[in-house]
Picture 1 (cartoon, rainbow, N blue to C red):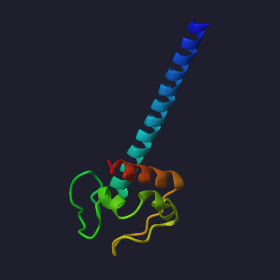
Picture 2: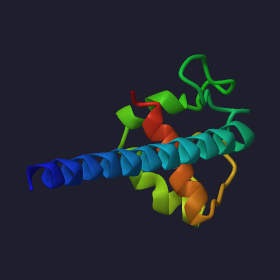
Picture 3: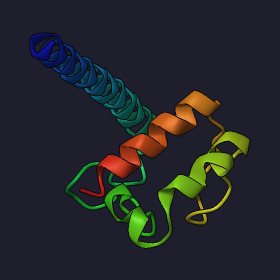
Picture 4: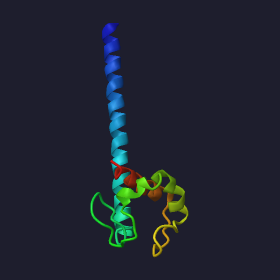
Amino acid sequence: MRAATTVHAGALALLSILIGTGSAQAWDRQVKQGETLARTNCARCHAVGRVGTSPLREAPPFRELHTRYPVEDLGEALAEGIRTGHPSMPEFRFDPDQAEALIAYLKSLER
């Protein structure tokens, strides 16, 4: 009976590793998609990476946004059409998956 319990515990451990890895891979894909969105739509004004200055001085670097407010709160604004930010910022509207991906990317810059 002890061997069966050990095998069962080992299978559960392996399953949790696989699930965790799948979640990590999904997170990585979402972050990568968000980075692509940021570079495509935002980089002409904002510094979107871990280093560098924003091309437009009044546009805050993305890596600093979390110091101003919780980036998780941007989801609704991104989906409905973000109109805030620097004065010359154009309106952007992302579908919910894109908004989640962009937020995931912003969260990845907090580390």
